[in-house]
Image 1 (cartoon, one colour):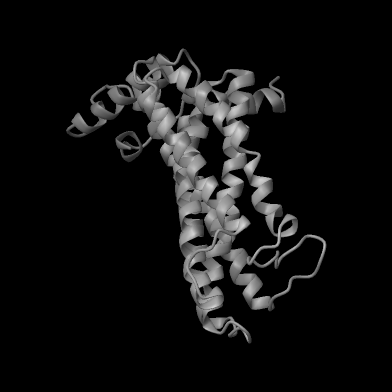
Image 2 (spheres, rainbow, N blue to C red; image 1 turned 120 degrees about the vertical axis):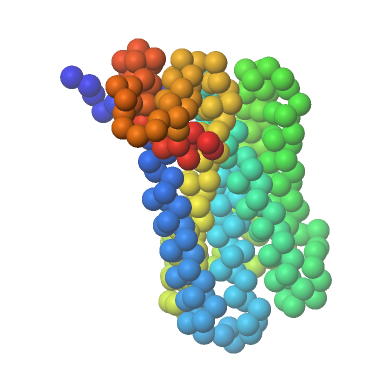
Length: 287
């Protein structure tokens, strides 16, 4: 009888995880779109005008979720990197690789929207503030991770080097978070805290949380989509990928009916040695 631990551990295999990721992408993608639409409507239409900052404060509905996700994604990337070093699992390194571009995007959005918000609030787009500078370093860590992987031809060596960089760079995340407490900065302190009541109107908080959940959903969908492409690239010579491609090509070549041919799912399962890999759609193969 399969235990709960062994059930989840089976998805450490790229051959097992690939079809699961394909089934999850549409759900999280749709959730991201719906949450974004509702969150933007509440934030830019329903939420009241701030008594001090006027309409310019509304950029927080993009800035704050992006800043949160930039920090959180880096910690998740460091977790997968550490797991790849300790457990030596291929999927862990692939997940870390897939997370880096999305984390870099959110870090860039955070800095860009922060600059737009800073101009009417501080009178300038940029200051060498502790929070801003440490967030800029976070962006450089993401870009360094991506560049380091691209510069090493051997995937296993690239996995180890990038894992070390991710783990060392993780120390910057608490520096970003606590910078407004450790140093005298222009950046305001936390508006939302787990130990205190929120310092904003209920509609503002609702919009911010909806946009945060939208960012989470987008991240999951984008990373799963990207890691599937990484799997096909790095596992290109494995039996399950060969069977997947052959099954997709056979499906496209059919001219009506099955013609006695095995389905892509059956072909993939046979090539994987009975591991029960589910079939994927032709669009998933193309990606």
